[in-house]
Image 1 (cartoon, one colour):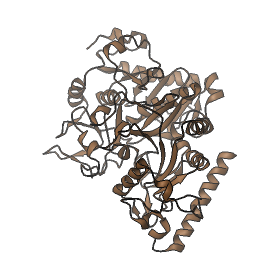
Image 2 (spheres, helix red, strand yellow):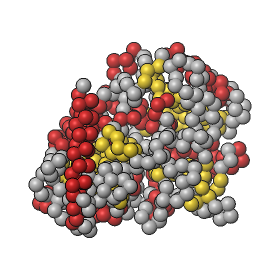
Image 3 (cartoon, rainbow, N blue to C red):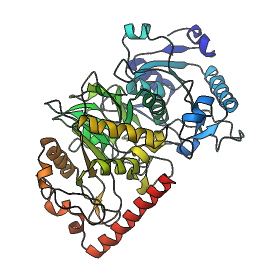
Length: 514
């Protein structure tokens, strides 16, 4: 515990300040003051309140002189004036000053010391403090002593509403970033993922200006040092597929690609845990122990065991845990240049094949398109999969125009000879409600074949709708699944759906070009 003087420079006056407390202390405070529960495996279970997913419509970006020229303005990044931002920050700091205790967490974003960002989090819920301890890279005492002033400060006053009468806001929820000066103010939402994605947005703003590509992806590495990148939105399988007992995990969600290779941005993982089982996701299941933080799960009152199938609070149940909780995690989380780049899509129409090889031109087209489906619970109001296009498989987190990231990826693919693949983890045999979700063992068999090499020799002719070349055979995957039309009972219905999806791609491309 420290006195309030540690925050004098931050303008706070809370009566009790805890700076970088150990997880055990945060457990004690969460159980005593934050209505948390201790689960049977030792993980801490908490609730995020009314908002159980991100609130993208409430995100605002400060229109500073520098940002005006650089930022990708529009529905993803709506502008707010510097004066309005200062009013929101004052509202947040006033609220934090009124709390009985405040937590200050320091950590790094980026495992490569040349590119890492020093992040400071100021919050009043021990839940939020533990979450960011898990998700940031935890500095050693020596690193912390020499870290200097933070590059980014997060003011999390999510229990307190924003001033909804400010004309530049849309509600009493506000997630507001000053990209130029490195500040994030959160009001009106207690969903912890807003902090994590705020840090990622800062990296998406700063890294491309240094010729480093930030990526919404997971990464793992084989025994021979071969690296695979998995692009994809939440719910497409990034976390699940990168957690492979036979490969080292570099990270599950956010990375950068520099001239020296890949580095993870985060110090932990943030996994969806609805329907989680030890059979299908043993590494993630085993990581739910002391130090892990469960969000919006339901526990049995008698046994304190977690019911991972219970979605009565939200479909978007989550768990965060340090990277080293995965037994084969690679720490420090850095790796070489990728051999394979996999674009994951959750196709709700059941049209795309489970795997197809992409030419360099196709890779760029599908990267910029970012076709997938929003998974229930990932965002407020989403209750079932919805077809969507999200540029670079992460439009919600982009700070600059998508073309900046696409140009960086194109150069890096060409320079390092990485092979690109499109893998569908969505539906087969029909659209959502008719077909079935792609089997996880079949997808893992596909990835095993990609890693083993040799699929290029199995490629058939380009299909009639997307020009995709599909392997004729993949060990461990039924042949009839490889060509989607064969998995449908009605070929004519497949062709109609395929034409509709092609039209949706073309319309999205036309919007991007306009």
